[in-house]
Image (cartoon, rainbow, N blue to C red):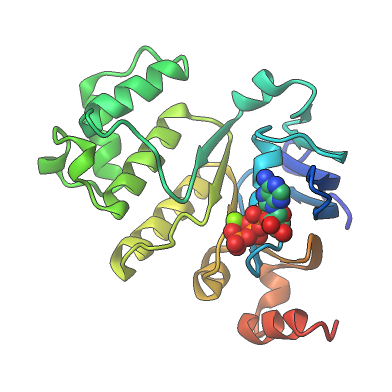
Length: 248
Ligand SMILES: Nc1ncnc2c1ncn2[C@@H]1O[C@H](COP(=O)(O)OP(=O)(O)OP(=O)(O)O)[C@@H](O)[C@H]1O
Ligand SMILES: [Mg+2]
């Protein structure tokens, strides 16, 4: 699939023939190519085991590609992992933070770890309110937090990193409907600020709602990719089932 030009002349996230065969022989990703521009949300759909997390982990350089490459702002992740990591913030399905630290302390710890030493308590307070964490919880320890509250802290940390790209692996799984709704709108506001956002999800309804581009993965291959415009008037559920059934 063609890699389009971005407003800046090039996409922020690019997978080019990205291929991963794990040590045990499983071909998890098979020559996958796609691109995400600034001000775009790209959602990856696909069955369990389709290769979504593998693709995200390759961008994060948690694992190395067998062939092909993942690039962040032109930087090849497995060739310059440190430079690439500075351009990207990650929110996992199960945000792992320090249970004995408060929300504020976690933000401060991870912001500093990311080299941001100028933030004030007021900045932390503001970002926690932006992600919807109620003020009473700001100085409470994470160990008493629900999954949704931890997820909010995770996205707050990602926002503080102020990276041009944000990757999210099933960020809304397990969130209640209201929290999921708020989370999606938060992602939209980050997109509108200029971020390039790549997320995996099993939620077809939300995927269609927020995605500028939807990709469907099947057994390591990108079997469908469509823009919001191309999806207008289509039922994404039907398309998804069509591709899963192997008709395409
Ligand atoms: N560390 C690993 N070692 C070996 N095989 C792996 C490893 N991680 C994933 N796999 C395999 O690679 C394939 C793709 O897995 P991946 O986790 O990327 O899928 P996914 O699309 O994220 O699935 P899910 O929707 O369940 O999260 C699967 O067959 C999986 O079993
Ligand atoms: Mg996964």
